[in-house]
Length: 131
Image (cartoon, rainbow, N blue to C red; front, top):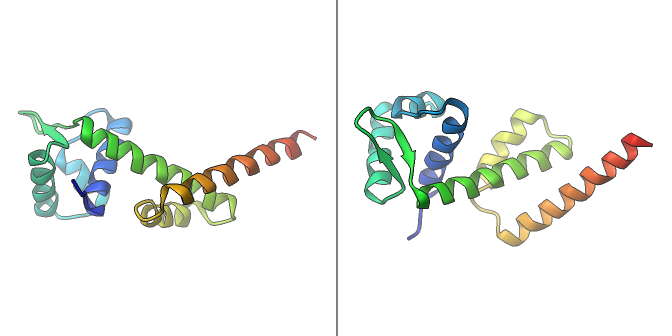
């Protein structure tokens, strides 16, 4: 099943909020993303219907396995790209915003090369700092 960028963003946000807060409700997603309650409500319904999340009786959102896999993949890409952009000298806030856009469109091959480059430069920085 093809999942849209907006759904990936919602799943990633649920993952990040869960890590930060423990329990996540739709209102937390509204506050984090700045979207309307109606938009988030519609998105949560679609994600639930497609088996990506579950919602309990108290309104708590839980990522189901397919949703968790997508969220972790996107969040991993986000962290890698943010780190890489910061290595290049980009301000951290701008780097995070740009990573959010790029995380959805870059190929696995490109991401792997970015990962290799970032790790190499991390190692070089460590050696230079310790000398």
